[in-house]
Length: 612
Image (tube, rainbow, N blue to C red; front, side, top):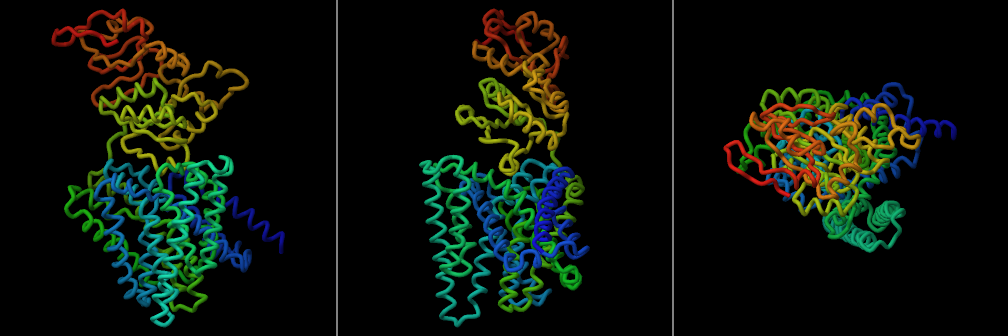
């Protein structure tokens, strides 16, 4: 028996990795292969029986997994960011959440015959979308910038809000069977302990991080163990209050000033792959295929109401008084796939409600999974065509994500931004990020190849990557990550003079991308030129001032970088002997060329001096 359990746990880990890889490779939300895998190994072939494997430990495992999910989601709920992303996002995560909850709750009461408390709990469970399903979908659809921003931030923000709503409704159900006088007392006690301990432990963790009271290598582990300890302790003080505690704790940390939680959010990636992915397979494996079929037309009717009534009504009410075009509203009305938060929280609550003998509790999980399957599959397959029909597909992404915020990268970004080319600088060096912010350049502080970056970086208008950093170990990882997102022909890096040495032998796939600005151009050359007083300049090439004139004026030391032609931004990836007229050429000029350059003549014959 021990060997069998060990084999099943090993299989679970392997399947989790395979499903994550398939989602990444096929550019689909990972929830789809995880769900399919769970159904195949569980109800279809009967290879895995979670109840037999874990026994009495199944419920604690699911509880801890849900606690991690809710804590991580709450860490992304920064109140200031909600305001920064426009009225529509604010409306969707407040008014829209309430409208969706009410419509689904009422519909479920009549279609499924649930009692009102259980119907409202189900409504609270399926209001969330989540970035894990929205972000991969947006990458394949590529809608307009405004629509993509709304959907992305709605998914990030509504995750903890929806989970908090579901926790509150469940806690009400848990005490509703008591006498009326005890219901209010128990509910107030749950809220007091949950909110009080959440705020207290959130504040304490914030102080630990702010004042570096634990070494850096222990920080992530310490936060995780304190979070799990507070979850358990809260449940011991008041049953069912632990989930509220960890949610409030995450929200408190996310909004506490001068507390850097980026490392904590990034640490969650390993847990997602090895723990939460395995948890989702277990949840799907516990599904009873017959229970799904037994939902019948009642379940289908509920799904249709969620997709065709609740979501459109929510979007159109939230858009009232905004300038959002009708086509954008119709697109937003269709795209709202449900994700792993709904599945995990519903499974946990269903187990508890079934033990308490609540009528209809056994239908909660199959119905939630039906909503997940229906929304993710249908919207993944049709959202692209719907966007084209409405005319809300975004144009070709001409902007750049630049990894490395050195002096050269910042100067290049400033020139590109002045030409209305979208640019985002990413770097692990805080001093570089600080200087870029002082120049009003959009930035991301951290590893751009992390899952946190996938959810946090706004890629609207950005379709290419320039690797301009000196980080030899990280550059290949970032390159390979974005080759899969943008395509191999849209990721470029600088050559390294040591590239052929034994220590720096790299794969052929990586070496092919090391052609940015020409094979002889290295990070050292760019940094040295800028340190010696070089500058990046934009020059118009015309019939009266051709590329040949440009070379004569600035000499062979001038390095062409990028040129703009008829609304398109083109990179120079090899030595050029000629360039067409009618373009705007961006180049790096050494200090000597700037000083020696004579007075320029503009197209209308006026004289102007070359800036030093």
